[in-house]
Image (cartoon, rainbow, N blue to C red; front, top):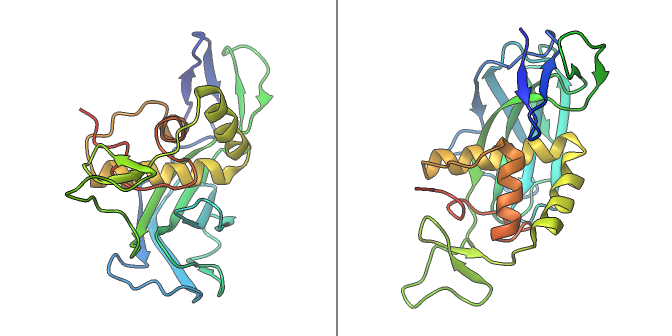
Length: 227
């Protein structure tokens, strides 16, 4: 299977045939109604993801600071345990990602010799950890430091310029966890508040959220829905 993409300048990129798009992934554990206890270990298991080269279990809190990522070769494990002491109080995301092509090669034309790249394709399956402190909106208006988001809830508001947002997101996307975490956030936001018409996948979502809201305080319903 050959993946073809177009750069902003119109250059066509041909990915190596070994790069595959994993089949859809479904989270088995934890279930949506599973109580996530701060500090306790959590088992992450899944079904699907065929075609992936690696599978990863991940956790991110709403502040984007305490993050956990464990990448294993796809097919070698049936579940990954997030150890004790990792999960913190408050909201967050927990789930699994099927990865392929995370150390792939690409070429600018079909005839050129390929060069190394760090791009990859992935599928996410995640659950949102409910927080007791999530701002759900106030009849009298939003408290200081927040504004009404697209879904009508109060969202943390500390926007950055486009250039600063580029630097922040690029720093995170140099490692695999940036795309994993922001991809999961985008998927959850799209599922809960469709439509979510943000271009360029996890990267575009990270950039838009950082420019519009607060990069370090993610919340569903701030960017989506989009008319």
